[in-house]
Image (cartoon, rainbow, N blue to C red; front, side):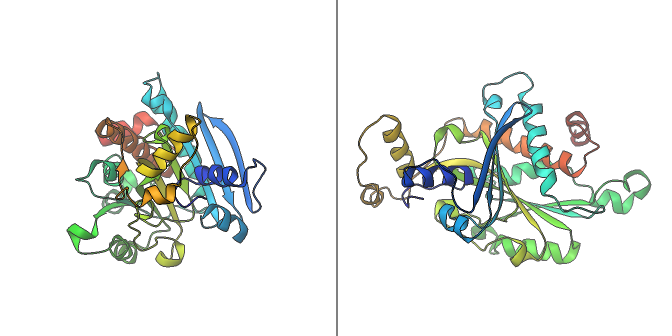
Length: 302
């Protein structure tokens, strides 16, 4: 993948590799397919081995991208279809067997809009651990789910990984689901895409501020990440706009030296982040409680 083009999305890493190789054939160690689910375009990328990891710059695992442009176009039923598509793709990645507890973690700074999708998603997620514990007659059939929004190092003095590890030691869940903001290479995918992966996550890697990795190796339990791209690197954006306009490409590595690490986000970011956080929160709730519908989640949270 070209070093000047930043993206956290596996589907885009695959596109960039194929462009740099000037071919569209399958990549050794990578299996990809595209389809539609509940009217939403879905791209599934499976990184199978070390060759695939080197080609895409992603650890081995499954990466599913659900596109939700219908939500931005305010299409009838788009919210419900987006929620169901994300939930249906998330469910198969969950560990199998029994009703085990799950810890949800919404990463990011709630005071910076493009970085707030994680904490906001926790607001729209059903937490049940306390209900299952205190009222087993009414809620004993539900999966115990807890949620935290650990904040950022600059305001808490603690790494997110440290706080999540502490919660894991106390709760001992069967899995951790982490929600975070991502970067994309294209404006069209900002706040209209949800990526689900079973390989964990490195918070801040897309904006050049990588923190401690959060995966099964570091946390000791299966880790699923759910990410929403909310920003695009300025040099990456210029490169893609140049490509779309059919103009000759300059030396982007030289231009990057003068960009100052600028990141770009949509002008409607407040509304868009709120909408996608709601989609993610509802989808998490339905994936973890399959007997519930979108209407049930709405009623439970109201």
